[in-house]
Image 1 (cartoon, one colour):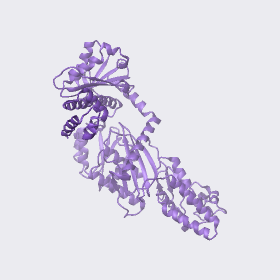
Image 2: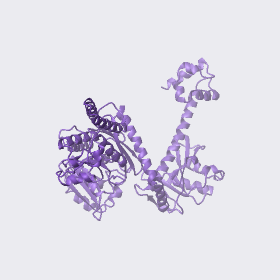
Image 3: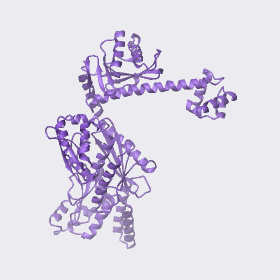
Image 4: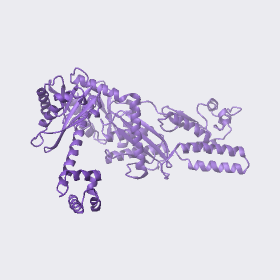
Length: 633
């Protein structure tokens, strides 16, 4: 709840039910979060009433002291303003690019009489056409160099070009610059080319940067053939060299489709509080280039928010917006209203960039099959690799785990950081095939070689988890196992799935066994609270904190390991009981059958003839077995 909640609740009564942008602020008037809505008052009330289920909302609202809002005419305007304000203010609770550097672009100074080309990280200026952004700076520089070998253009950094530009292109130099002599420049510095001819080059460069190379290739080939026919071999050689340069650009672009369609493909991979996005730019059936970004939010925000925020901010700065943008909506589809608003905003951006008010509408799609689905899978895989590279480069995992262990030491008042944590869980079905699991995390990482599983031996009524947990702990900390090197040393922390009842059972088992000096905590699933023997109050770890993510991950891993073993025992028991019903199949033949077919699933799928061919199985037994197995269908 916000600190100034009553006052804020009163103020919200005067907020209109209109589209707009809202800004939550702290006591120092710092903006904590920027959001948009088609109905401001209704959306802002959800933050106070608890109807917003995002984990970090309570943490943010505890800091909120005031708010501001801006009314807009439409939802699209609200989205545009939201993106602008997030870029300007960098609110801590919004999704942000983790690497906040400016990304490079390739730019053409279109306001000049003779536009120049440049590699730049500048903020966008009026009268300049931008292509990008590029996250591969070297690739962007190489693209500029290669493009100038194909289409002669002046560099913005060329001293001779700067000089003639300063004179308004009125005072030419007596001789062209060195780039012009090499064929990379058209000789603007000596006014050796007309504005009209130079404009043709600029249009060709724009087309190539947009990924349209087919027409340019035809024109260069025609010019080369015409020059050769006129015996102008010097010009023909220049056209040949430009075709070679164009070919080198095309070779760097992977062909993925025969289609001429243009679209972007966005792959996303999330972890706890971090995510990676990989964007493939596809033009004329080729991957023109790709970009990857690291975001400072992951599972701690909902997927729709992550997707819409990234797409909105990316295309606010992008030099192109294609008519189709592909992303994976399967984790959580966008609401109809959010998708319409985002598509309308992207369409407006596309028409602004192309200076064509009738340019095709932008669609957000999620393909289910075909080439586009394969490209989406490829983008997602590469997002995973981008995230891994970032974590390795920044030691992200190590730093986060160290922080988690120190936070647990402080929150639980432990004597030492819990370098070895053991967690236990029970899995049963009405007291049958009951098992216990033990997972071990060393230095914050899963130590799977130390995992252990226990088949419950005692007879218990229904699913008496407390008694089963007592049995498992009694076996784990028995004198025999404490001296067994395979179980490792005594843990610094025992983490139990459950609240006070489960905690009491563990403490009773340890006391009976005479085990001392082991810290025990129970993680209650409902509120994600930690209970200990030395505190009557629940310990609540901060939402989004490394320590909370670590204990939840350990708890969930113990649960997964227990269920996996329980299902295996159930499947084995079911197989045995079914086969035991067939006359003539005893323990030996049962084992031989499973060994022969490889699994019970394959055994069920076998034909009557295949069953009869199994070792030790007669035609009569095969017939009875086949009838029984298919009675289960």
